[in-house]
Amino acid sequence: MPVKISIIGCGWLGAELALKLKRTDAYVVGTTTSESKKDDLENQGIEMHLYDHMKNDQFTFDLSDMDVVIYSIPPSREEPNSYLNSIKCMYDSIGHNTKVIFLSSIGVYPDHGSWNENENLGDGSTMLKAERIILEDENCTILRLAGLIGGRRHPIKQLQGRSLEKNGLDLARLVHREDVIEAIMVLIKSKQKFRIIDVIYPMQITKAEYYRKMAMINELQAPKFLISSPSNRLINSKNASRLKGFSFQNDPMLFKFETKYQK
Image 1 (cartoon, helix red, strand yellow):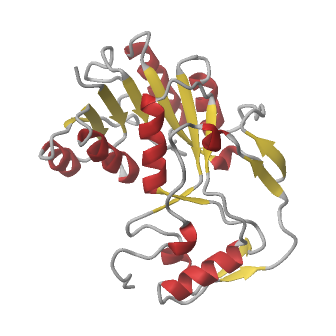
Image 2 (cartoon, rainbow, N blue to C red; image 1 turned 90 degrees about the horizontal axis):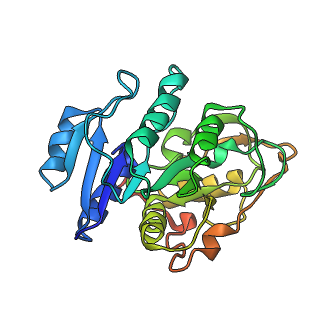
C-alpha cells in the first residue's frame, strides 16, 4: 500500500514537495486556493482540492485515513482566527495515528537573546499560538524554516540597489527549498521523535556581506544596509543535524538564479 500524504497548502514550497513525493509512489492529496494550480497539479497525478481557510475552515475531503498530513499554509494577518481554526479543524479530521508535520518560521524567535528549539517562547504571535495547538499532539513535528530560496526566488531580487534600514551586521539565515523538501521526506520515514526542528543552513555571514556576494554572482546592484550594532540574536539549532539520513546540500552562498533575472 502506498503511503497516503496530504499537503494542506500547495504553494511555492508545497507544490514542489507534492511532485517530489508523487515520484516516490506515495499517494498525494493537496489543497490550493487557485483553480489553475489545481488543474496543473491534477494533470501531474496529484489529487487536488480547493481550500481557502479564510472563507471556510472546514475540510471538504477526508483526512482520516492519511498516514501523514503536512500543514504548509502561512498565517494571515487579516484573519488570524481563521488560520488557527483551520489547524483545529485539521486535528478534528485526522486519524489517531496520523503523523503531522507543521511548517513554521524562525521568525517566532525574539530579536534579541540566545534561543534554541527547546525554549518556551510563549504564544505572543499567531504562529506561536498555532505551534501551541500543534504541540498538544505527541505525533507531530514543527519545522521552523529560515528564509526560503530556490528556483527564481531569492531576496536579492527585491533588495537589489535599495538603501535599507535593516542592520547589515545581523546574520543571514536562509535555507534552500530543496533542503526543506529533503528534510520533510526524511522525517516522513523516520522513527525518530522531534518536537521542533530549525531548518537553517549552517553559515556564519552578515547580511551585508552575503547580499553583496549574491548581487555580484547574479550580476545585480548590491543593496546598502544600515551598519550598526548587531541584534545579538543567536539561534542554537541542533536537531537538524540529529535527523538521521538528512544533511544540507544546497549552500546559499552558491545560489544562482536558474535563468538570468531581468528587472
